[in-house]
Length: 73
Image (tube, rainbow, N blue to C red; front, side, top):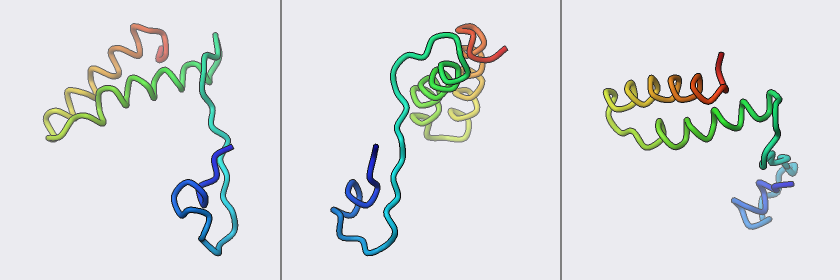
């Protein structure tokens, strides 16, 4: 579990605790594998793009790669 209070506020935030279960690893043959694969490819391409033109090309490339790797059909 990831504690957002601890991670970002050093545990000093006097608000209700928010925790998130982090999914990672390899989940063969299911929707989680597809989602994680798509997110990995998205992060590798789209998040690095700076200009609108670069983002547009990165989105197209991400979709193409995801189809080729079986994450989108």
